[in-house]
Length: 474
Image 1 (cartoon, rainbow, N blue to C red):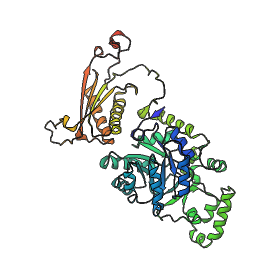
Image 2 (image 1 turned 120 degrees about the vertical axis):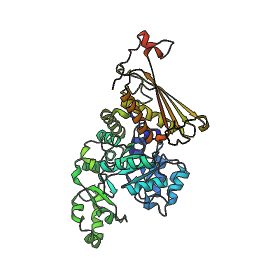
Image 3 (image 1 turned 90 degrees about the vertical axis):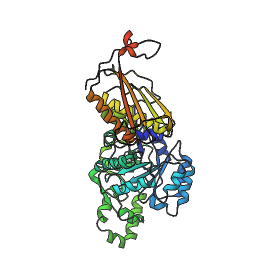
């Protein structure tokens, strides 16, 4: 089972799930496991520890990306340069202005993912040329501003991006811990989800079993946003950012008493180091999000990912696909007329963008016409811009040189209302992949069962090899 979105096509992955680059926890073993299972694995480069980053890239298997706390790159640009030389799957920047580093990332041809916490930061990410925006709500574990919830932040950013930079992808981050969360992320308009806490409980995670077991006993109400551990660890975080962790005795003692903590820092730091060494999680920190309350087992990264995708597909089948490695299984009897689609585009659209356009067309037809997902017959042809002439038919608007023409051949029986729904769905789906409304031209041509041959010179609807589908009337 796979879920196909713009994210999967952009990165060439099977599932729209990205491993959050959790500091230290997301090492080469975990990132590689997520990648091997069909997601996008990111190393937790965190505070830009050069030795650790080099070691993880030596150990990584397959394509992985790397995430950094942006403000720690200042003075450590050579670490970023090293990572870019490894041809990573992506660079993920969080917590700080990405502008100083975006040009070299883009010059290297590496996709840039920028994590944001509000609309202003989203505009900034678009401005610097981010390929993907990870919209992080306050439910997430680790650092963030905690100002917005995922449920409201994601759709607002999706709308902003669709209007101002429709080519940019959006990830939902914060609180996605199972297939319900992934399905919700896609329903909110995101192209995929950034998942951290669920993979904290992966067998491959670089964290002790004692830490995992302590986390699994907690619920979302047991987490708290705080500055205590930044102070005791000597991490100079900007004041706007707090960190969500599992509440414990140490946090209860010092949260709200940070000034006193500063005065007694040596003793508190000694207590913290002792707790860390002894895996005493009444003192040591456990970075988890509110989604921890949905997690009750330690599983392999592959099992986590596949379970999440299967559950999401059952809830929201719109993006459901079949893995290329999976043998064909016949669909249930066809009940709707199947379309053949021709898509003509200009050759200056990259191949992956052409595929995204084709996927958008198919998603619209599945959504409106209720055809089976595997009833997909498309011809995509790229032309020089001079070879497509499409004027406005006197409607008074201007088309660009990147016109997309969609011709849909289907059996007769669609109502005018249904066809209008098709046109509307196509416009919305196309806008999400960067095709302006003025540049979309659609024509629907109807025919009958006798007009189709699926091979071997036979009209299978006429011969009875295929059941004639019922015409859609809604």
